[in-house]
View 1 (tube, helix red, strand yellow):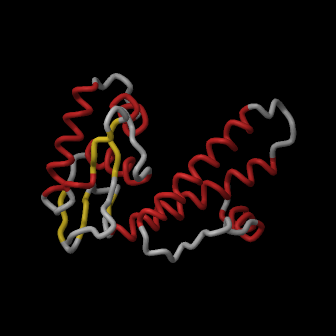
View 2 (cartoon, rainbow, N blue to C red):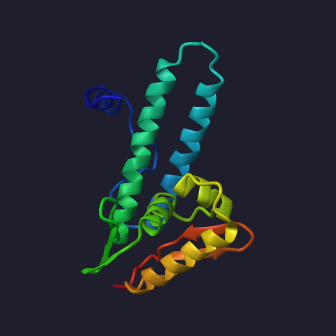
Length: 177
């Protein structure tokens, strides 16, 4: 969708009740990300079932929801103070930077875009790397390596194990730095 069309859609829609992009609370931002992820999933499912019925309004709604989702994801990263340069795979935090491998950067980028949401090793292989052939052990190894690298910046608590559900990105309310 073009910039003009997206600008028109933004003017047409308003924030949801209770939304405050100025909030300093990471947990609240993560909640809004979850809300918009769910809303986007529902709209995609409705569009998939549209069967030739007029869908332009649904597409506009979905574009707006995805735009809000990106906005909240950016806000989450901003509040966390974690900056991931996707081009050169550099992670910066509290004035320090480290270089990650492409796989580490892809994994971290995916996890940061879905804060507090747990993913199994199979889901991570498919969604973060688009490679369903990676074994569970390989994914666990990448997670372990990334956790070690995050530790260099004092962010070792960022990737957590959610018992029986998988791995999740969880930044503390006050990130040390």
